[in-house]
Image (tube, rainbow, N blue to C red; front, side, top):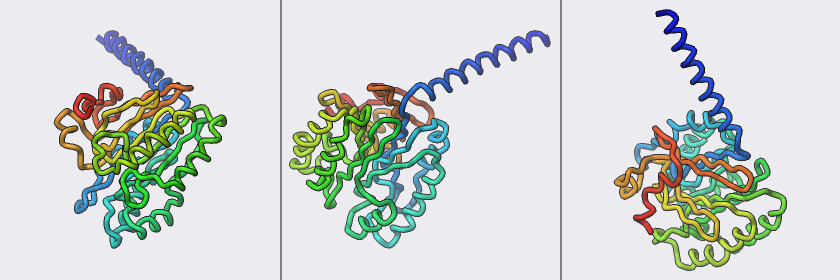
Length: 287
């Protein structure tokens, strides 16, 4: 009897060691690991964002090189409670071990006063950083309180920033509003055309692998244009798109892993991690 127990124990120990070795290896086998989350803004009255709060432990377990927020961090749309909302958000973010980067959404900047408050806390609304030889670009595409809008000034900055593309291996772009989506009905056609005719060709010429945005409270549908993948991930908060939920969607964030010139996106739910292809439940709905 004791001999059988010992055998079972060592069998379990062997399986555990194999799993631990595989898991540790999977965490070390990539050149860049990012967590990307969007639209954690709480309900206006409850002021709660339980999913984001609950996932901070899991985010830290994944050991990302950086955590990136795609905007709509707070409920916003009111100046009286603005400071307390940002204080609450920053308290949550302080528990994240990795460097944290953000782009502002329309709930974060919606007036001149909210812009000033944001810049006083966080500085520039658009910028870029380099991590592990990869270039990360953060765009503010709700300028002038207009969904999907990028000013000529920001575009000129982007052109200048991308002139250094020989210095990095590949680049990733992050913004708030997915102007390429057919469901972007509040984005002016001129802003859609500006992205398609000016910004997308610029990204194509300068080693950009993928673009990530939120705003719509769902995952997908994912789009590929000229080899650049365009992702929508706005599932970090309490309000999810009804169509998305009816097709099995739920709160989530993304795990982006880059190796050399290739990358992989996984979608992390409360209870599972699946591929971006499996998670794209709306690909045949919003064509």
